[in-house]
Length: 295
Length: 322
Image 1 (tube, rainbow over the protein chains, first blue to last red):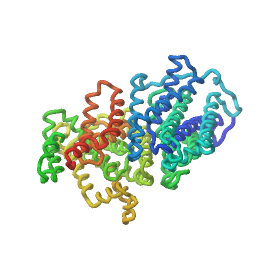
Image 2 (tube, each protein chain N blue to C red):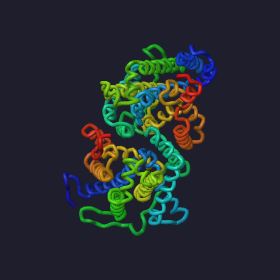
Image 3 (spheres, helix red, strand yellow):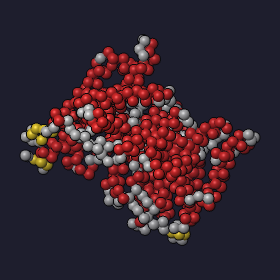
């Protein structure tokens, strides 16, 4: 063990790891928000609640049908994504012609409903979800101890983030998506079913949130308020990064997670607020956000 | 107010022209008479929230800015009002002024950051700043953390009138509420208010006409925060309590809900909305967490079906300005 700036290396790297883990979730969630905002022009306030739904779905699948972590990781995003598709068809599609604010208000209402239902059935205490057997334990890297599950979360989240980036920026499907974001009427004229694309985009964004929720379940306790606490931080992340760029959302998410982790080491009192302070500074210096375009 | 609207619709236009004055008179008469029929404490709380909602409505209804962080001003004013009354022994009017001034300063700082972004980002920035101040309230000593500041003395107004008397307190709250309401009414109907509405309708146009829209938005934001603070500071004295609930994000959501239910951009809507929502919370207290679900459903229903809110719909049906 050695010391850096008077801080033992294990503590420093430990917090750095926690920062990367938090950053993984910031990145996944702000990516989902950015994708949804790009197509629907709606800020999905229920994103946090849908992340929580993912965690609860994984918990329930384990409790009642014995499906473990790995099947959950696939099934849960699909299930929650389907609820997203239903929400889009039932509610959101009626709002596209209105002010963006109504989308925010509607999804806020949905978030309250989802969180309220979860609190009624599960109380506000956290429920434990064990780390899958194949990822238990960890390895000693010399300067720190790295639990296998945490390493997996970082790798998985990076993979999904860059996978999404690749699909949107480098494939034909992504090109349609980007074109429909710019000019939906014209893309429709080319015979592409834009409303269905919008529906599926929302479903995909929600599925991303649920995927993050499943990955979070073994790290944080599964609790009804896990989403609302996180989503406000993610909003700040989105304000800092700007929603114009997919890569920007990923980089900002991980970067802020790390900064938050380091703050815990050097100035623990500010660790809750550091992201908001950074947001204030970014608003002063670059009002459009780090990767944003002036609206 | 709902009772008045229908008969008015059939009246000649002279009455229709004065619909706002008539509604105001009826509201004042109602509020003066109400404490003899129902719990004064409930009414005082409702008036505080009504003022809070009116202050919020000044931004969303007349400038088109959705602040999702108004709990910051309400809650911090509440803390400072409670703390100055309890720890420094301020008289109630000074305590309320202290709280209100705190909210004004917070509004100036947060507002000058938030108006740098428009639309949906504005909502997110205000929410994030409010959350930051929530964490701050959680950490600093004087707020009492999870316990809040309890048993705040109501004290003697101007050193003379004992506010432990429920009726004396009621009159004070009524005066503050009506003063705040009339102030907002004055703002909306002033040349300044007209510029705000112009910004709401078309900001680019307002800029091209030579208005420094950022300054107008900031002033409106500070006014809104200050009045929200007056509401929070008064609430702390009335309920003798300032707690984390007042600064947390659900409170910001609640004031949005009250205004939405009553009617965005209507003068009386936020008042009706806050009475309705508060009454609902009282009646539904036994069902516990389902209140959250019901509030969520009201949000969804309002956005999909009644975007004008109660007063907005009534005004629309009867073609009266309210």
